[in-house]
Image (tube, rainbow, N blue to C red; front, side, top):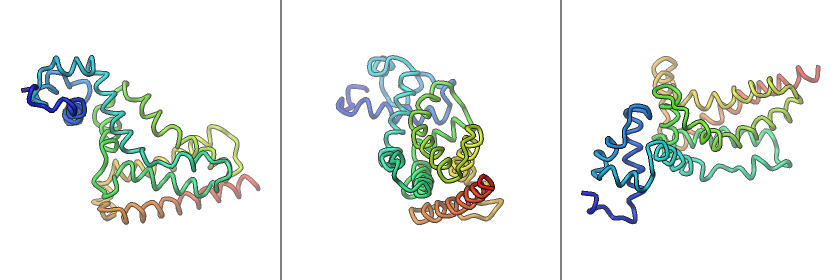
Length: 216
């Protein structure tokens, strides 16, 4: 059956089939044989292209990460002359885009975060998550320090986590927020923009208060 697959797209097709299996069963419970069965190929073909399950999983994560972060404005976030408040706004919006996708359906990377955070966490993906979300998160920390005038590293990490955490919460808990708080589900780009503005407003109110406290 593997001979019927267009070889020019074989690796990408294997990635997509593997993604479905990893999300359903988790990294630990997934086997190469299960992926091969899903893809309709011999397991040897997967070993030929990726070597082993861990390498395949990491490539799945990288594939999703590239897709989710391809438009992340790192250049702006790392610009020392850019307005720090606008950096916060930009980060929040693009973080939500990475999670929900442009039409609110969710990206592969967003689905991965759900699985890693709440279903089947795995150690092998931590470095890639750090590589992808790490640089923009560090930019947020620098912006928070610039806005508040706070230099305490531990405090800055907590405040950054509060900003990042809001974006992740609305994705991970999207069903709960709809049922418990009557917040409408994200269904498109305009909803993402509106939520981004609300998180930004809340975050900046907190940061400006911290600035006043620091100056006092």
